[in-house]
Image 1 (tube, rainbow, N blue to C red):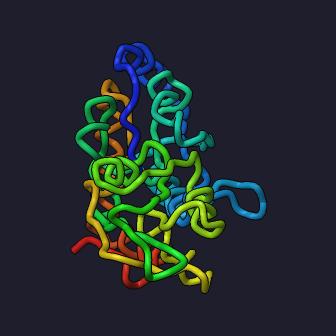
Image 2 (image 1 turned 45 degrees about the vertical axis):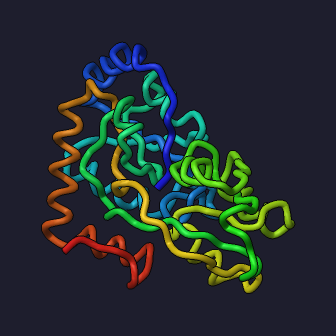
Length: 244
């Protein structure tokens, strides 16, 4: 899924102590609230989606009291490191670059594909203008090729850029694009899907090893009893990749 490659590790050691002092009370979960179906704000103004349901279940299984915090994507890792919350559940792909800054649990979605969506089949994916969300693995992938990368702060803006003709195509997680393409006749998938990342996992500070162990055990239990697969299918459809 998405990726951020910034941050100084110096803050991590300081902020890591915050959880050690307070984890018996409340674990704060940071999310973007703008990347359906992973996470979004529902009509009642509340955080909702696959990760909200999953995170609540993980907290029950890990015997943690949890609360949710909404944070913009471009500062979601810096605010984890500085102690504004304790973990990230925001459709965040596990990547080697990010793993140098923070830690991850095992993945809670299998590695999935990224895809291109456009308003026409006749688009130049190799040399055209491709929209992607800032600081994501999709943006990094486009930047490494010959196309012109057009970055936006939110995923909604990347899709809007295609609709208004500012970009030839948008490149994002296919799981994010599928419902948008299905609901909008003017959008279609083009080109080949691109496998990126190591699946989506919970992001933590490097120092929070006890919390990581608790969450890893909870994720493993959901994989073993089939609960996680059921949840993935509920939110992403019957064709979504699940665990064997």
